[in-house]
Length: 189
Image 1 (cartoon, rainbow, N blue to C red):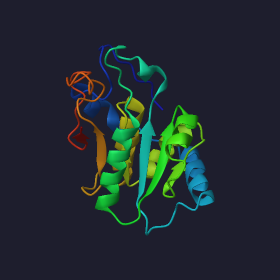
Image 2 (cartoon, rainbow, N blue to C red; image 1 turned 45 degrees about the horizontal axis):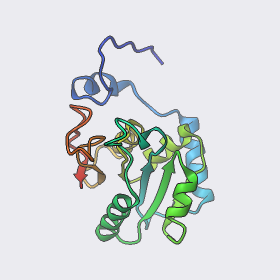
Image 3 (tube, rainbow, N blue to C red; image 1 turned 45 degrees about the vertical axis):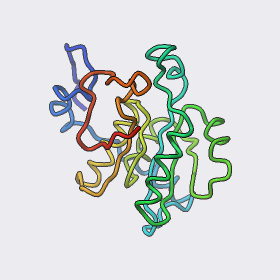
Image 4 (tube, rainbow, N blue to C red; image 1 turned 90 degrees about the vertical axis):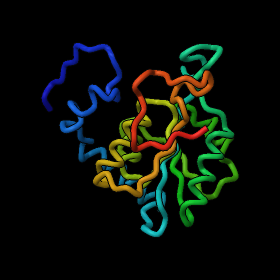
């Protein structure tokens, strides 16, 4: 893979950068193979059920970008987004990727249609790319998972991706970082 150098201070997802770099980006075939194998082991390759990734980021987001207005999303937001997806499709399956597995286990303990990934972040990204739809935290990792999913599906119009309105600035009700909006994501309260 060629080396890429950027001299501009910004996020890769910024509109001014994304079109320049995306033609070169791919997930390695070995990671996709490992992700497919994991899905088979979890019985999640059934074509009848749409696979939706749910990315939950906690960790540093509990106090970033500020302690007053952290980017971490509450359980209610995730449940609302998942219920919205359930209303749109028949018997979807949710695949949770997170940096806080214990939180996810507690949150979805009684949900029969939720499966939690215990894989490496590399395999999690490959898994997200294999999903039909996604529920994104305000995280660039989740954004890339959605982007790769869209690429795999030829940017089809029926892929649905939900994320918090105002991205990481959802608590302050102001876009943060600036320029992070994507037209393929539906932003919800």
